[in-house]
Length: 490
Image (tube, rainbow, N blue to C red; front, side):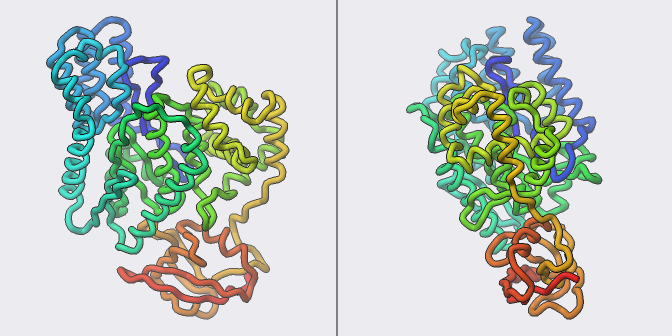
């Protein structure tokens, strides 16, 4: 996804990616590094007043990353600042064709001031809805051309999503259900509490790509570099706000996390705000695991935050919401995500999450970091918040990450399915489990998604040996259910 800081760099957009990594951060490779270097040098040249150099670097950036709208938007700012109005308007329109859809930014950007009296600029804003619809049609046509007949394509009009998926119709429907659950919960618990301006622009359409494994690997290597799919640095998905695309390799926590980012960016755009990473990632992380009603639940990140609480190594909230937290996000992502998620789960359990978002967005200009809103909502000072958060974290349940002797189990050996749908049966423990075969992919237990091993352990650990559970599975292109009697782990 992409963020730009209006207060620090008015006008020019600073693009950067945030991925939901399954383990460790992605190591940037040369294509991404080169694009980032060109962008940084162009911005430095612009603010140094060297517009010719800025233009040259941005044109190189556009060639190096042809599908990225950011260099075209920034080029429009450079050209407009030099009063080259017609070329600037062409660059602006090209950025919109590639996915840039922040009307508020276009309207208020001081570096586009020379364009605002142009008939083409006035017409652009007057037909903004038509612009978004045309962009959606072009994007849908592009997806169909790229993926062909082996994919399913659909639109979600209420959520303004364009789908391209390689999954079966049933798995596709399950994925849509997960996104809908996230949307319903987030609207009710978070975004409905913010006071939107009357002139809030309509939401841009977003493409949701649920691809074949080989297509995901190709996309990740192209977008983030070859190292993104090697070893422990493999990623599960990403929402890129610049091009309005969400890619997910699995239909569980990654899909929920990234779909929340889509909704949060829409809220930020409507409000004309850019929230810091601890807020963006903390909110998205709380929906990684949810109960059958869609409410967030403890997960493996909970165990990490409990350990930090026990060792008194939680980062003080004043530091976490400042530069130290930003460094943690880059250098220690597991620790950062655990604490960011914990802060919002803490607020949620106390009925304060919606109040925080309303207070923060209502007082954003006073304190964009969110610290003041957090303390005001909690009704305490920084030291009191730190003490209360630690006390709460110490009382969190230990989330089971594996099954041990005496626990209930399904009697199967499993591996993550390459498709991201669930867990593939690679063997049986003792007698064969009723109704299941080798190669079946377990997607749900008792109606709850089990897309990864931790999700399966959480669901099964709530039972005792001898309990019966209903298992949903995919066998090649068919889907079915089986009733299993859970066995005791020995």
